Amino acid sequence: MSKHLPDGTIVLDTPEDIAAYRLLTLRSALGLEIQGIRFSSRRSVYQIIKKEFHLRGTKQRVYDQFTQLLITRKILITEQ
Image (cartoon, rainbow, N blue to C red; front, side, top):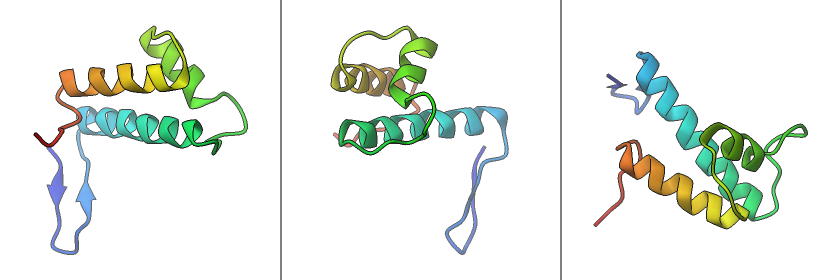
């Protein structure tokens, strides 16, 4: 379970928390790629997400599918 320290720091101390943070980071990076900003000089985040999660489509469609996947897994909480 993540811990929130008084100075605003969040400590991720379980494998599940670390994996969830990675997925949220991938989502953010894909959003930047959609805007034209590269996350890496190697493989694009778009390619990584498509391969790892077997998603298909344009960058925007993969972003939408991946966002829905994170919501379904309760990793991403949306405001109602």
